[in-house]
Figure 1 (cartoon, rainbow, N blue to C red):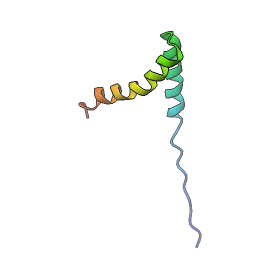
Figure 2: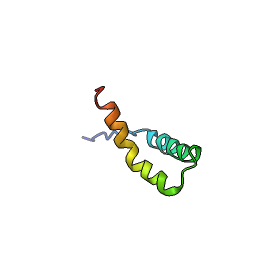
Figure 3: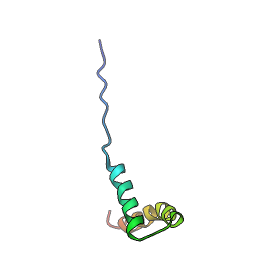
Length: 54
């Protein structure tokens, strides 16, 4: 008996997020280090903002 294997693709949401991050860096004229800091800090602020709504 053969087993059927299903592979689910998670989508390309990560590419859209990365593109939005690059757009934000360019729009705000941030240098590399501030953009990298934003990459680390931004998910924390999004989580703390939307956590009470859930």
